[in-house]
Image 1 (cartoon, rainbow, N blue to C red):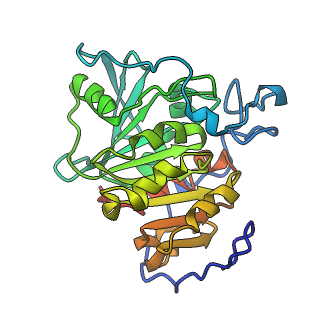
Image 2 (tube, one colour; image 1 turned 60 degrees about the vertical axis):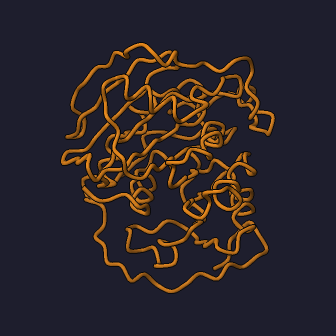
Length: 313
């Protein structure tokens, strides 16, 4: 199958041997809650539904990987306050930390004994509270039907912001100090756009099983190479790279690896992925959805969470 932004033709392997039913009709979006910014890849400055002036849209470059000033870091000692409610039929907590709010959600039917963890990191031009609400993350997690604890921490909202959680260990400790016990299963890290600045610093965490980059290959190639190929635990890892606004760099990264599998467009159901795609150590998908629709359409996040080693609820 030909990938439109490159000269290389990637041969895709056969049809799917997996049967699957489509997402429930009531969970399929008929419109998108957010509209991406006209003048930059990361969409709105003031809110996910407003396009920013061109002058306020910084370009993400390799310099962005260098923090300005010191990292904001939790003290690692004090008990953390949280609020609790029910959202989308599951339990939801909002934890207050020195590095910003952390949202935690578990689905109805959650079983910690067999569960994994999903850490979702938002991109630029929003904060964790807005991303949680505007992207309807609890609903998308529910649609994935995965038995997992879903954690959504604060992250940089622009080039000028520091990485909030430079170490995944610190985030895990913060959740524990809010009296929430994390499961022992696989950890899947999913990041959108500018989230690469945070995710690239977690590649050496021994418990991370899979990284999913949602149009986020703005930099960090060396770190992600360590995760998927050159690092000491790389043989155990899987990765999914989605390209839209940064499709050229995303597919360029993927083409370095003989074990990479590529496809055009997301299927409607899990069964639309071939065996090779589902089992791939590195899967590249060129998205038919634009940069913001990847996280707002409810067509991508739930589906990709099912192409992991997590178990269904």
